[in-house]
Image 1: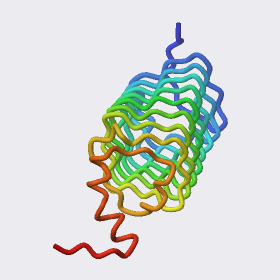
Image 2 (image 1 turned 90 degrees about the vertical axis):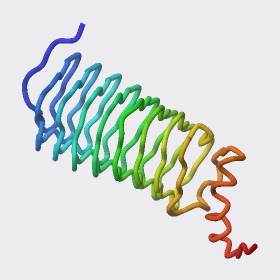
Image 3 (image 1 turned 90 degrees about the horizontal axis):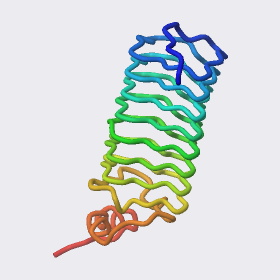
Image 4 (image 1 turned 180 degrees about the vertical axis):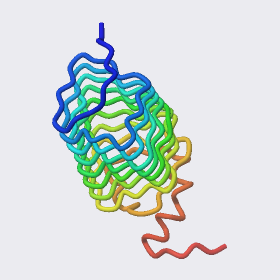
Length: 202
């Protein structure tokens, strides 16, 4: 049973076994905070500063935020459900055994992030930037990836077959290590041809 928590956040704060529900955490300063076995539900995170925070065995549900700074955040054995983020800074973050279900992420900056054993399910990601990131054993199920940038990314056992809309803006050559469907291959053929300098004429 989680204990209700109605306070604010503090840098390097330690939150254990708490439920944060419906809080307005706009502009909150929680850099380096640790959340262990916590639930964060329906909270507003506009402009929140949570760089270097750790979410361990925790669940984030219905959270929303524009311009939140989650650079270098650590997510381990965590769930993120029906989140709505815009322009979120997640560069250098580390994700391990994470389930992201539902929600929409606009322009998330995931450059140089590391994602291992992560599943995205029923999500919409608009112009996600995975430049220089490492994705290992990552699956996208019933998702949309619109304008994705994978320039310089390293993909290992990444399953894209469940992506219902796949648009690669940059870094198509970095898809080595990913699995796509034959239909997706046809959709991506013009991108591959352009990258290889092949002209296609009828």
